[in-house]
Length: 499
Ligand code: ADP
Image 1: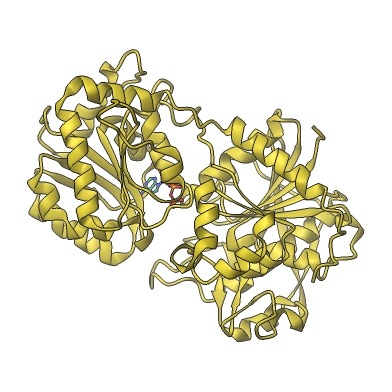
Image 2: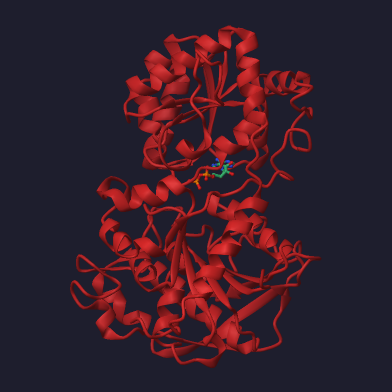
């Protein structure tokens, strides 16, 4: 396998700054690729939240000039040197854009920042300008989600004849098609792109009269991936999962591949997890009991051994199926079930969950915050992990849950369908409980099947252990990316000829 120079561009990456699954993927995939011998440079915005001292970031000695909004704007770039066999990280600074309390939206209004198109257009061009300043010529430019989707667009247009990118092939990974980077049409003029990219019907970025960053990336990246095989099919099949981009995706069908995310088992394994009260593994599950007792004590829930505890850790967004939960709350809590929810997001869900907590104080505990340690303790302490998602590109939590012996109850969509095997009582096989219809009845039916098996302790133990034995480590995903990059390189069309 050829060793590649890989430029990775994303809007978040653990451990520096992370709001969800993208941050987890970007924490692990670059080093998994570096471990295969590739030379990986990761670019992120330099947000307020990035702790420069802790991570020992150093300023680049060069000044990076970025053409932006008809002007030349300076980017202050910081670097974190490569750790042994790891990736190198760069942080693109422009205080006016990135020194803000949150990454994407104004916490006061709850709305997206009004200048997000400027922020991420600047970021994308600043990345390319910095790469040039470093005299580095990547083979692969791997960009993630709408925030970085303009990078392939710039590569195919303004940088088409740039020697630094002469060999570069671009790969766009879609982590969630529900977020496309949609802006009003007047924003297009700020991007510095050729006008034809916004012509009605034919323009790569034009989407029903608005500007769509992700659509531009889908049209112009050399290759596209998404984060599970099933999601790769779902997004092309129709509007339900394609959100209006299904046609554009179908046009690129032969260049799209689903590659399941991996799990960083150094962070997410009950046998190594320093954030849980007691470590445990499949051959010694007694620690899980300690984790359960402490979790429930902290939550102020009465400990009932015969009543399963369900955990839910999630962004509180429509995607996650929280409405199924709130709609069916009376039925759920009429069942023999307790629940702990950890999440932040839409105010509407905060209110509904707070009300439910008031109504069922000995059955439901709600934490409306982002708390990584607590996420680990819930994974370890719960019996069931609930993910009733409307759609789920990959989903990491259900894979973490499997490792912690916390049996997932999930909807059969995207990565959930690809990673959780529905329990078959006749063969006593499976790793979780899966339902198809997006209805609270279907969810309740799966929960009651889970409760039935929970009551038969031995069977439940087998489901737990089967799940714990599943392996979704990053090595496999990184190898698949590596092979897919090789197919991108074999695209013999030079960058810049497909506009
Ligand atoms: P998504 O990317 O759609 O948010 P995933 O399941 O792929 O969903 O990944 C979510 C990641 O974010 C997991 O690592 C999960 O533990 C974490 N997470 C989500 N919400 C919270 C929260 N409120 N507190 C701590 N961690 C959270």
